[in-house]
Length: 234
Image (cartoon, rainbow, N blue to C red):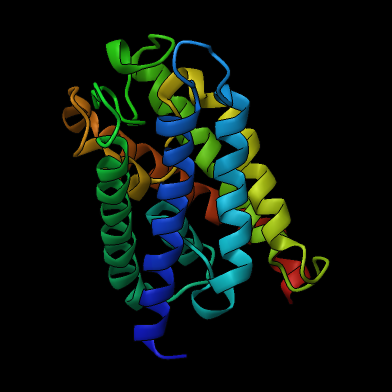
């Protein structure tokens, strides 16, 4: 498979992830003044469904990373080439920003639109539950590590064939159910970047944490997954 096709798949997959997941938060989490929106549970499911569907759609082309932390975690697990990591991450970030721009254009078509947080991630005053920077860093690190353990395990040679996208999508849903109140859930630096640049808050000034913590967690989770599945893969 050519690198160009792989990068196109990563761009498209990340685009859909941000448009679907963050779009559900911006457009559907709350509907007008009626509070009849999909709320946290619906947003969580939207993120899980986007990963599940795009993993089936384009995962066979690029591996279906859609996330810099996943790419580097899979490098740590020995499942991805270090030479592909830089181009993959660039494609993911560009796809996320493109999706953020499309979402901003759509959302701004509503009368009285105010971007506000625009589904961005944050801690302190920018945390939905006003959690501290330390709490945000720990939950992003731990949950990204868990996510990589699920990814490496479910794609192992002796795992049930064809079910990995379901396990990965459900894992991402669970991660969002746990952590939306803390950080609005990143576990994905590209997702964080794609909407932070359109937010009316100080989200960009906190973006560093949502690169460092998920990537560190992803690498640790990749190593753990590699150790757990070494005998299986042999």
